[in-house]
Length: 229
Image (tube, rainbow, N blue to C red; front, top):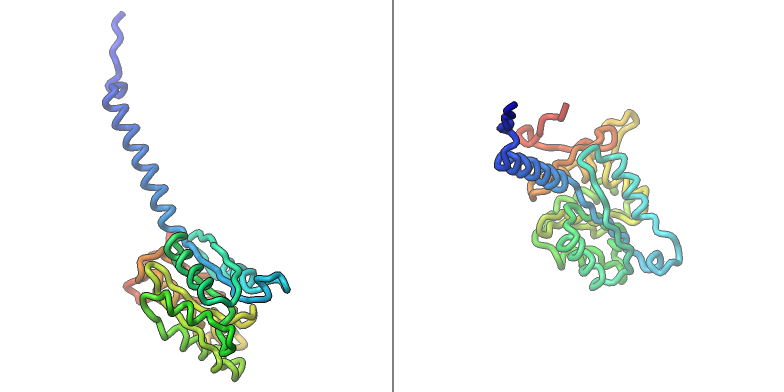
């Protein structure tokens, strides 16, 4: 009896098939990694960093982000720092340059007191200043407290990352990110996070979709991707 070897058992074809599968898997992994959003969270407080009291800034940010971000998958890299300008500058550079963060949110240290140096450190490591973010944060906060004019919060870009200074109190963090809403949930003054996804688009980061019940991201029609089925 004569046996005929199946053509697909050819060593060349097997090698090509294996190469194709390996390449496809590597491409899938690369695309998945590329779409992951990396967020740096930095809480700045002398006393919290010394253990005098428990930090509330990072937990508040993580809780809000879990509610607000619908996609893509995301992870955080956190830092709890004293109000030391050199330490803050070093941490911000490390989060962007080494850890690859697309978004860095700081909390605390934005007032006029002598030890409040977060905006100064942020500006020192910036490639571009985005003044609209600071202006809008103060606009939102002024709807709640007149002392919002004392805030020196800034927004900047460093390489592939957007860095925003937020207030130190959890309630103020949420208000700044979400904005001012009416009794029926209608938006009166937009929060700053509405502009964050499109800004991340423009500097080459992952495409962020939000939970519109929390905050609705704004993009020009030409920049909106079709929703995945």
